[in-house]
Image (cartoon, rainbow, N blue to C red; front, side, top):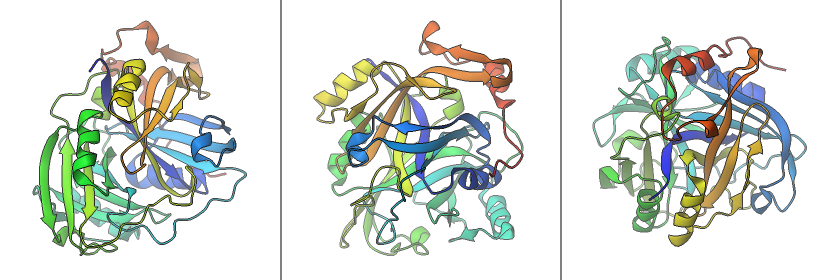
Length: 356
């Protein structure tokens, strides 16, 4: 393969209030480093927005301690359509996002004291790692997982996105997609049962097959050290019907709308994905300007239609107030950005309220 998956860049979160949602994720998950904050028209997503170019507002934010980011995405003129029925474990699509923490017990107590909707106490997952679940302010399922993989230490309890859980209808078919194209080639566990660590969740006591994947190779690229390692958990229900989370709804409606990877050599990835039967359904082709950042973005679908985004970053802000931007096309593509440059980016962290 002549392309590189550098890490999970972000998870898209459809919602009805960008700044209120960002406030929650900054306060409780440390997502306080904005990469862009922009209102525009999503003119290239017509296959997933009912054939209409939709006005939207989006914020992309990271946690400087490491991990992927979140893209908080809101329609500004279209009334969002809520999922029906409520999303449950194993429903087809992204039903949960994993964030890493340093100490599950301390983080759990912090959330309990803060009055968040915590669904379970810290318990061991099938691989023996402590984790627990809560819901964000819109009811999206959030998993907090202990990790030793960190980029920096800002004193926060949590890091960024560590991965996500995706409901699938055919596990073996999906394993080929996530292993061959996305590089999640190492199985941490593969178990079929009912699971005690999920019993407190919506339909968490039903029989299912859970497969936790990670990548055996170290990710490379400008942001690979910051984005860190990641995991994808695939879930297939055994005796229960799974609903398609975005059935009858549009990309951008409330929920987890896509899983996005930072990549290099997009043309080669496009060719390989097409050869594997997963052609790109959206391609911005040249560099797409997102106001404070720029790059090429493309989409494909997993075997159940879950949206996978790829972004090849061209320009990023280092220090906006000094108008310092870095064009990544003018440097060695696979080389990591120096730590001091990422530190300079961190000076743009937002610690005050942005509610409007």
